[in-house]
Image (cartoon, rainbow, N blue to C red; front, side, top):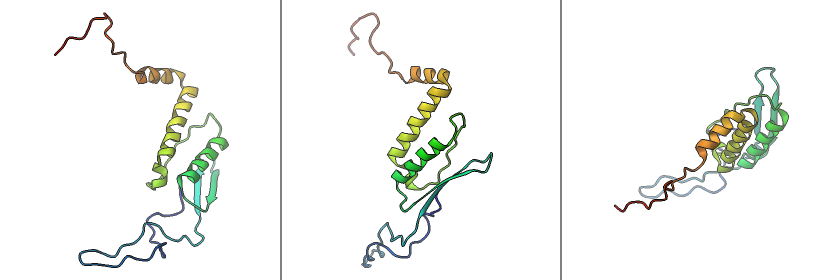
Amino acid sequence: MSARQSSTRPLERTQPLLPMGFGYVEGVTHDSVRHGTTTLFAALDVANGQVISRVRTQHRHQEFLDFLRQIDKQTPPDLDLHLIADNYITHKHAKVKAWRQAEAERLTAERRPDLWSAYQVRKAPKNRTNPKGDKPKAL
């Protein structure tokens, strides 16, 4: 979903290279200067060829969540959405996972109340009290 390739080698790092030492290789920082690089988020409706897109200057979980919310607003409620994201770390952020879980639960509750009620029954904590009121036996 991103036009930015995370495996592309950056040309300029934000920090200078760390010097090599005996038994160590030259060290580099994890980030690079973007020099005006933009990030493209895009979603394709394969049925009619419509593209929903958003261009951002950064590629963080906040921008990705914003794009997911845009998709949610621009698609009909009866349309099933299938999200295919690359292995970029932004797509695995805890807030992104929480949003996806909440959306899945919301859609299941709206569209399939029978499955939702069965899920709630399985998810409920089991009552571990003794129904007879007897004290548990000591080991």
